Image (cartoon, rainbow, N blue to C red; front, top):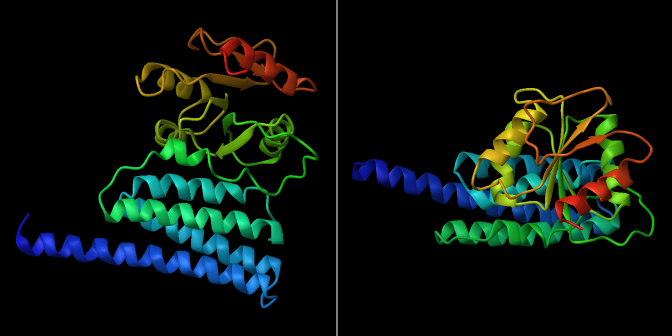
Length: 254
């Protein structure tokens, strides 16, 4: 690159860092305004979602890898939240602090252990699952958004697992090597790559082949000749949670 090009890249990088810092400040101010009663829960949530989307866009544009992954988890935290509550504020500020750490590492060209960072994050908000002991087992559920996804997510949360929702198999391929969940559960029917395709890809890649994967299907009659032998099939139904536990025992997760 020429000196002019290097200067331009450096300037854009600095602007990106400044933009992320501004967005994080906006998040903190929104939480303070909500706490002080200046804005209601719905307004606060709309503000947070807007800032989260902006953060994710900037992180993706400038290849802030750790921040990009963390932004996905931040958006996923609001997967089922319809109105911000006081108990969400602490979680949001915790996310903001961790995003600040990612930004600092990017600014200093330092590596950061993303998978370890993920384990410290708050579990998904918006679900009332009663008095459940939350385990340290992180499960990534790869399913398109919808009622079925919410039902499966709730069942897994009620079993005490920490949940990550991903709506696209292509996104999952990018996120799994960085997040390194304890298990991936993928729906058979997905746009782009199918659940079977994703399972095959994960088992073929050295970076992910040791991560347990299970496939969700609906029919007992379905056969999957291309599915790797190490990938079990889960069937939706009343005993789904128990079936997941049985599969996790076989896979060595429990």
